[in-house]
Image (tube, rainbow, N blue to C red; front, side, top):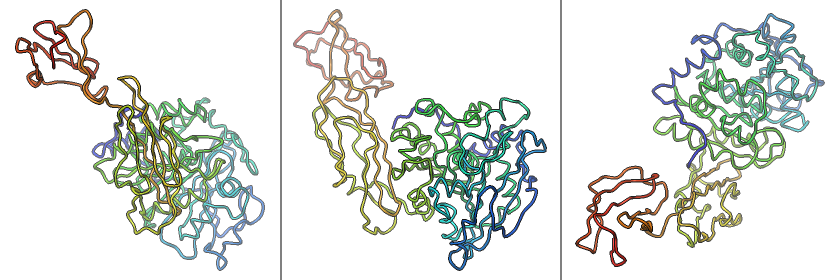
Length: 502
């Protein structure tokens, strides 16, 4: 799959060095700030900061799996003009625990993460969606919000109050990016990373942005699930040019672009990231096609390592949220229940041919199938290609056209009801029925050969001139070369005649 993004510099061999360099960009040092701690901890709280009521009574044991909630309070900085409010994170303790910690990081629109989960993800329905679902699954959940600059948190939903741009523009701090990770780092330092069998992380919007970057800095996060949080710079500029300053800070993103940071988040040690975006997101990072320009680049960069990156496009909601479906996909991913295509679609066609690919009968699982129904989406395709969403088949007739044609990109998704899926991106290249040979009207001593594919030949062995058949014994090839990575140029000892055959 051709990509719009640049080359990925990060490899398994140099990932640790790039992590150190990234820490210098963010913190000013290769030393991770393990000394940062919260200012206070309030155990077994019944109320939440800036949220009315007690939203978790229905899932508190024995009605549910929630044992208790601790409030973790973090001072961002001593400057109370710039940071007038402390950050309030919450730790949810399950009654029956699986021994694992799951971080939920919220975004720009609410003062605390539980408020975002209830009002945003669950559309106002208590006890929320993500936190409650993770607690029910046995996870200890650390819910962390974004910081504010020179503003206090609102009650309810108020997007854009955080004032993040001015944290950078004012120039009060040498490393402003570090503040975005301080509440999470302080909380993890308090809890102790080694006290958990595994640490996973998800986040929405600004929290999805944080989840895109933090595992590249802190390798204790073994699986990450950023939702509607980021795109590589070139893709972002093409599809969505908005967002706060931290998302485009040149200090960091001129050093490593997002697709390189995704790669780093999966290496040294080998880890996993599943990026989720919402197709119909009214805010950010939506649409059906942006992933075709970078996802395969990250996958290819991780080839040969045990690091793993994948992408899921959620089509179930129209809001800027983590949906029930997205949570199902995350939990299925954690269980290592994966799908793949037994045979890949054909990626070359000729003019006028009939194209066919059976998605349904190529969809394969690494676990026993439960025969759940499959759902299909055609995300991008040329006009001649269509999807039968009942039979799960791609088909169409390739139109006749010019000798040289640019590739067409195709993207489709297939998934079952349990959250196992494949998003497949590929290019369809038109090839010629056979080599096409021509001369220019003013110079018949030179013949040009078009191979089956355009832009398919970069170099040629000079000795290969002898492999051409010539019916004229008086004719010989003096030279062979390549022009424009596509055309073979043959220079002959004499002008070609209409009766000559090559």
